Picture 1 (cartoon, rainbow, N blue to C red):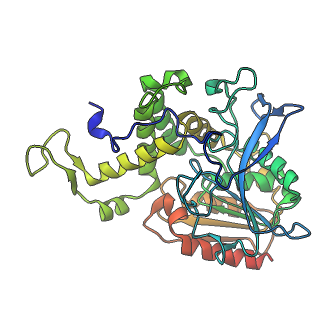
Picture 2 (tube, rainbow, N blue to C red; picture 1 turned 30 degrees about the vertical axis):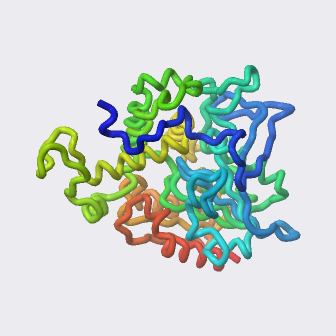
Picture 3 (cartoon, rainbow, N blue to C red; picture 1 turned 180 degrees about the vertical axis):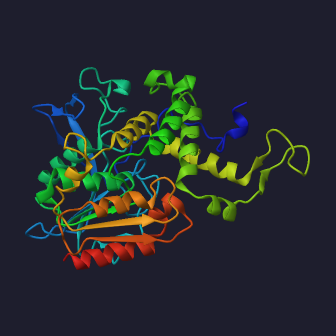
Length: 395
């Protein structure tokens, strides 16, 4: 009974992650932890770590024009640029990053890296374990947002960037931006955190838990050892359902009604659609997003990165949230989407209200949008305007 829900008849790969036998596209690769392990916050460690990244623009002589852009849960290093060999989709923040845009690549040296634990060139669960060359699978250690940032710091060192002109991110990218400004307060000149939080809320964790359960219940998940499965042999059913659940939280009731209403996508046996397997348009939309992610992402990376988001808590080991925010020296811009049900505006307002650096350039902006959490990706004009104004104010 799975076939009625299949969006695309083409076979699904066991893992949709990038592999070295595919074109690298614009990726570059930073390697570290070759002589001694990279220790992780949870007590584990990694050897022979690779971080995939892309750059735009030119680093100036004193390395003062570098901006780090951090991606969200299922993003990657391809923040700007067209789809093509090595890049299944166009840049995920195309309207914000690029020549003449808010983060102007004619002016700034822009860096975006695939996070540690990812599946688009950085070391993650699909990567070969140094001991046997087989994919890590669930042998991969738990990583946190803090670990991701420390890996990015190694990349920054290799690029010769001692201080970022700004660190910018939305959603999970905003978590990384916050951790940068707290872990390395003297290395961040400006902080921009969009549609994010200082610590994961119970409801955010709950949504993530439901998605994980859907994936883990797929018999084809095989306890994380599905990489050698043939076409359609991987956990595409559970993985796509996990994405569909998340997709509902990214948008709003009003947007779904506006776009889909009660329109039927397909009907069986009678014109009223009164049949068990007839589908509404909104179901087809969710199927489409589940299908797309299965083809470009790895199920284990989805689990590990989702867990890192659940574990996100800037106050952990620092004496609490207020003590952590007191470490931020950089002027800080927080941006909210007023219809965001996943990362409500109060979470960004909380960050702003607990800053203690007394910088007059600190600012909070709220964008009115029906797009919900995905507004940080969709409302590129409004988001870009606030980022541009803040970069000018912190020049």
